[in-house]
Length: 71
Image (cartoon, rainbow, N blue to C red):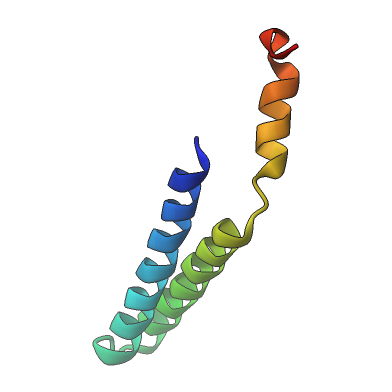
């Protein structure tokens, strides 16, 4: 995967987490589903934030080190 697809995946996860949070607070009135969807929104937001901040230099180094044609 190239770095733009990883960053785009992180951004999509963050947006999905935000939408799940709004849905959980605004539309769900039962306690346990609201807690579950709220925790799921936190998970998606954290994963997206982690993907946005993840250093991608190590991915480029390992791909060039493993390639015998890189010289």
